[in-house]
Length: 265
Ligand code: ACM
Image (cartoon, rainbow, N blue to C red; front, side, top):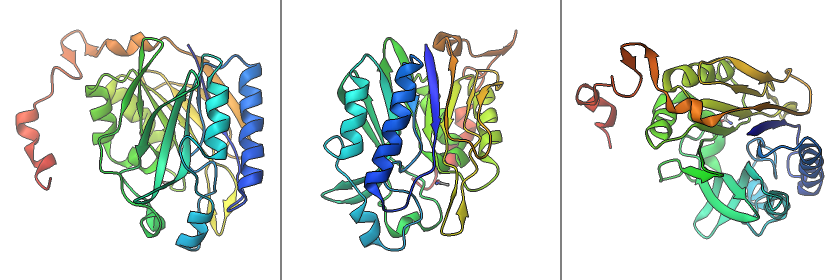
């Protein structure tokens, strides 16, 4: 299965230009026979809002909004796309990942760990991150700063994810390495699609990547380029959780001793 990560720069608040840029990546992905595409977080809007009014002015409905519709159409050719969307709902704005496949809206995940000033504009998601089935394979969804909470990738793995699809706008320098660890500790593929460029003093680190179940980077972009890279993966390799002949990364867990992890819930 050919999985790609798209890396792009965006213009804060310029929804028309952002749509053109998304369209450009979709065209490239189509030419490269991509079956599963991950695009960055907030790819309809940009990231560093000044006010809730500005965030709201760039938001859209999923799947009726302009970028969502474009993704929906692209997915109609037997493809899956996961993209970060600044989403407007009756309750308020969410930093969302829209999942669209085969011309249908499959799922929306509301980011549960909001980074830095995001809590000024976005409501935190209240639902567990989803695992969706596509072409018989299992894909888990998380957004950017969720990387810093290993519980998220672990829960996705426990729910059967073979690959984790991860729209991002990374600012801190640690995520790409952390996702290598998320792969190793869960024996899953990961695909992180990141932003480049600088917005109101925040520089995004690029280096979008795909890792295999042993944490090898099997595709990676540079810190500044835009475009996409892909890898042909066999998702079922993630079904083998053995890490030595006597250790299995899921079966060897000791959840009775981890109760502290959920004490505040
Ligand atoms: C982030 O969650 N956008 C760092």
